[in-house]
Image (cartoon, rainbow, N blue to C red; front, side):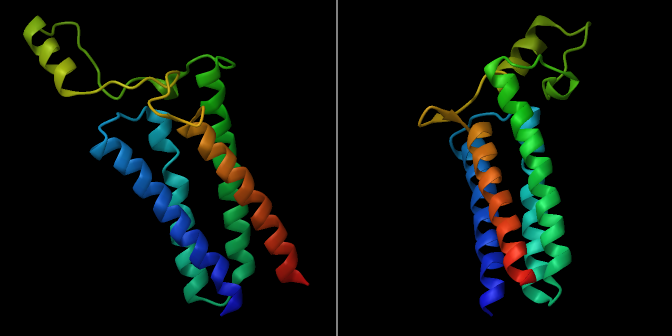
Amino acid sequence: MLTRNPYILLLLLASFCLFSAYFVEYIIQLAPCPLCIYQRFPYLIFIFVSIIAIAGKEYKACNTYLVITALGTIVLAGYHTGIERGVFELSSLCKPLISVTDNISVQDFTKLLYNKKIAMCNKPALVVFNLSMAEWNLLLNIILLVFFIKYRNFQEK
């Protein structure tokens, strides 16, 4: 049971992160940019792998998936942080989630603007303790990666 505790903690942490993201989006009403939405998917993988690890007995494969997922998340969050800080240019991954056609009327365009919040990847919607949500995500996943690697080495001994 002791070896399963880290997976229970990861399950709770990933669930909390997703809950926080949805809380900010739907309760506080801050629109996420496309990269913010992409950064949610690794947490679904963390939850899925954690459930498999808790239910099963083969931890080594689960740890490998967690390390790979954390690395991918670090790359994505680092890229998003770089865009927010002006290190990288906006790419096609950052196009707004709504599109405007050429033949739209002024009235329809006004409705579109008032009904949909438009978020840009280079403008953080929420900053806490001088860090954007993408930067918090980057920091968390660096810590998780270190933990996964240390825990993986601990399990092999």
